[in-house]
Image (cartoon, rainbow, N blue to C red; front, side):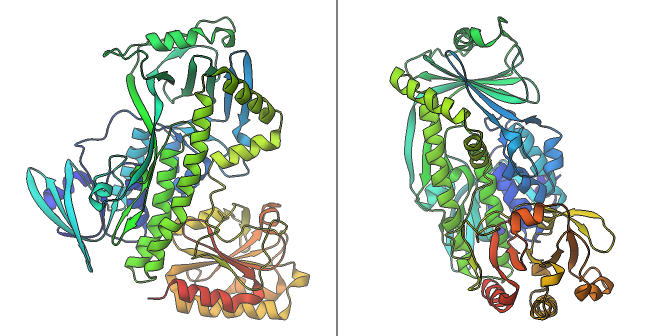
Length: 566
């Protein structure tokens, strides 16, 4: 539907944001913008989506993002849940990660081919009124003080489009990045890789990924919703026959016989065979004036750990609300600057971790393999270490603590011994129930509104003094008037009953304009945020923007005014 719209209505000559590339990153960005009423156009040079997918895994944090975009249910319906990662050496099991130990709403990895993810995202983008134009190529562009003018090729003609901002989500060979003259520094890995998607008859569990780290190379087996994916590494002078077949996979599997309980794996006909090399690269910059980069246009890495698609979706989710706020006049250039300041360090850390994982997994030298296997066995014997590794891989620990647009008030106590997230951290989820009627709810559901959310955490009723009550009523009076739809307000009382000192809030008219009134359910709020009266300002991307005690309400107001100044 969206692809036909361009031909039926004529070529659009103006949009607020032009997005180059209709992969997961570009479509996520489009959805985030359309949720906030921003006009955007997504173009892609391919006439149709690719039917095969190198990217597969969706981690816990990415699932939270997809839920905020209202697309997770559609993706989950096409996915297979993975609850573990199992690693084996030549002589038997080395290491196992239990993904269900995550303290998060989605303690698993979704195995979903990228093509399926893209189809779900494209449907959501179209439902929000977004336009996607395929078989449309960016030729070049120029910038000026007022925007970007792109020269495109579509329907056998040269077209021009004016946009306020443009974002290159056009992959590792990004034309946008090249036209900007931004470096893409890094290196190619010495091995090449062969991939096969097929059915396999063998005893391996389908709720786990399996890695066999062998003397002659590695074999990675990932369950798909339909069948399995096998990946093997080879040196560049190994098996470079022009016609790919299953011979190298059978040879590598023959080295794993001891792991299959005497059952010889039976390989079906491959649905897809591919040979590829991998690189580790990072863009020198993420932005030049009114043109920005996201996803694989910024960073590429080994497929081990399934970080690429997840990091690109994270880029887009971070960038979407900032572009929208900037275009709606509720911020300044610092918002655009903060995108690179927050996301490039995330990519740099991810590249380093994936590089270490890949080089150790593909090591062939006996001393290196012996050292690696010892480290893995040690990690496997320490459940707490395994849990930390799972959390890191899930991207739940991604934070922006060094960002210039997050802060704590002068009266806030932060640090490891204090309860609650630090400014820049992802806000943990917690359950609550409505104070008026007891209906269940969760903190993360607030993200679906696309606005900042102020969580006013109430102390125990006995500690809710006069000063705290005055601060709460002052905030409830001033915030809607000064920030309106830019900010939602949620009041959270400790598990028990709604405090009598705030009883009249339950009787307020106009529920659409009133704050959410909640009572904590269970121990989640206290475990994640402590029990004191606090102000927690959650950004639209679910990260903490500001924290402070109730008595620092004036500092919160100054922060909001500075963040949203025109």
